[in-house]
Length: 271
Image (cartoon, rainbow, N blue to C red; front, side, top):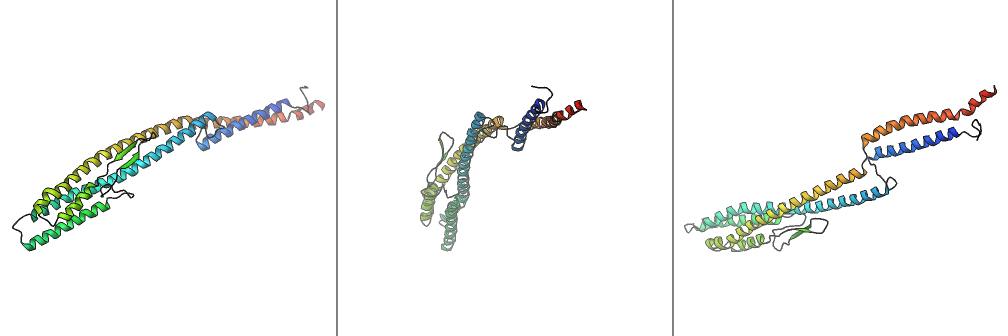
């Protein structure tokens, strides 16, 4: 091939190829900067993109697990709050029963005390009814255990229902007009025992839920960190690369202009 030719310009071809190569690399760098991802599609790296997609699925699954655990914690916390309120109220109920058992009470005093007791028991019933979260009431009669998926293997965490709280309250409400001393030693004693058992059970179940939620959150965070190590771009590095590519692009563009003017230089040979 002739070195000095007006028909073929090898130097220009090389300059254009180099410019296209730099512009392509610059476009990839700009994509990394705009998305924050080093691996944003299968074109970037098929294997790493597939791994990243799988990890994203894992993270979404952990989020679903956390949501279920949090919902169950909500129902358990409400049940604990309701049972605690019943425990506080039971002291007042016991006081009224003790006062009613005094044989020296006049008829009018008995009536007043009985009315107070009935109001307290009605208030206790309201507390049970209000101890509901998202349709779940763990202390109402007939309540069933609340099972929640704890991990992706399908293991579950169970919150034991304490329907005995309302069962014994109903029995106490029905017996409240009877002999106060007998009610104290039977129906009230059963009600108090049910409350204490419920508080102990709910407390243990809530601790287990909190621990499992913490474990799931930690695993999810570690998985997300691992995903970032695979697909996230190092923006400081990409910024430096972009600056260098900008200079390279300018120089390459200048080079294309120089090599493109080679035919003009050949005219000087014929002057």
